[in-house]
Amino acid sequence: LELMSGFTETGDGKWTKGRIYNPEDGQTYRSKLELKDHNTLNVSGCVLVFCKAQTWTRVK
Image 1 (cartoon, rainbow, N blue to C red):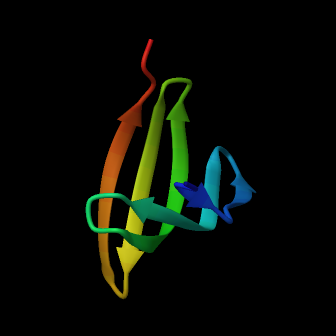
Image 2 (cartoon, rainbow, N blue to C red; image 1 turned 120 degrees about the vertical axis):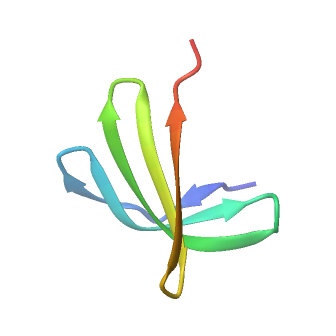
């Protein structure tokens, strides 16, 4: 099961033009990622103009 795919690195810890799978609804959404620091990743997914963002923290 592929959760994330197709991202293009744009520099400065950012990736765009990707797709992310949401297991809660079974859908795949346009997505972008931003690495805020060594342990924190901001993830956003969009459908049309509606977007939702989450902050993912590395498990130690």
